[in-house]
Image (cartoon, rainbow, N blue to C red; front, side):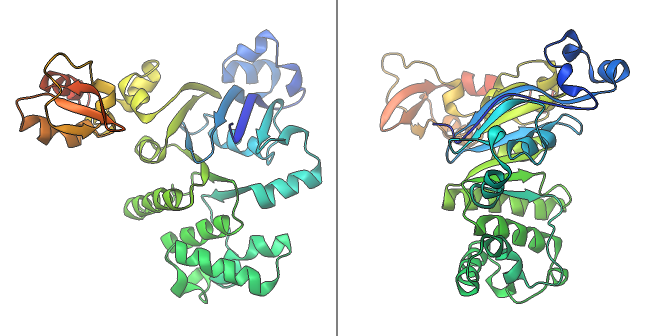
Amino acid sequence: MPLIRAEGIWKIFGKNADKVIGTADADLSRGELRAKTGCVAAVRDVSFEVYPGEVFVVMGLSGSGKSTLVRTLIRLIEPTAGRVEMDGKDVTAASRDELLQLRRHTSSMVFQHFGLLAHRTVLDNVAFGLEVQGMAKSERHARANEVLKLVGLEDAASQFPNELSGGMQQRVGLARAFAVDPKVMLYDEPFSALDPLIRRDMQDEVIRLQHETGKTMVFITHDLPEALRLGDRIAIMRDGRIVQLGTPEELVGSPADEYVENFVRDIPRSHVLTLRWIMREPREGESDGPALDVATTVRKAVPVIAGSDRPICCVENDHVVGVVDKAAVLTAIAGEGGE
């Protein structure tokens, strides 16, 4: 069962926006629609599902609609049309009180601007969501201390936000979101203002936290390497629509159109494609080569295939499910860095 189901989400800004949907105007380009109706279509007929424990990345350039889309999931922005379900509840039909409960208990959002409370300690910042929920002080401080340990900030509990670096402040933001133990974490370009090295550290942190907690995450970014590092599946948006939704391998190995192809052109294929992507059926007598897990990247398999005169046996659940020979590896990495 999906934890989030979005069906036919539209968001059109402007007067009489709801009258655009279902007409020929809905298919106009953004510029044409604005010129004709004065409306701006930010999200156009988007549907997807997110499963428990999944990191689902929505990626696109500025103006593609990705941030608007994630805000419609918890109605920070009201969708013009469509339906959102989260944890079995119809978000689009929720009352004001139900919506408050959803935002306080079921989901947590991490923004690019951390929004920390300057006059409160790190501990009180992390405990803020629990305070809003009405949790007793001793209990919420105990929980906040637990989460600070999780993000490696237990020594900063009594400090104030302005005493921390940008990376540490973002960790406080992460800890605050985790403290309420939500079912869904929504990240809206949280690391785009950070230095590249700190950004990479924070990506590692998100990966680690996801492994440790199993949280379901929806992550918005304009950065393809970030999307490929974090995402179990990635939806690429353009002009308010999803142009391709798939695993990192599917995007890099089989781009849906020229737009996606241009995006992934400079990504080293060997870093993303796995043996599963390039394997073939074993022929007779080919099951005695070196064995590697089917999820091994081509890059990591290169030294093994180079040092063997037999094809690699691709193993899944202790069974050989395919083989990869030198020719397949060479074909997979051909054209890296653009042609």
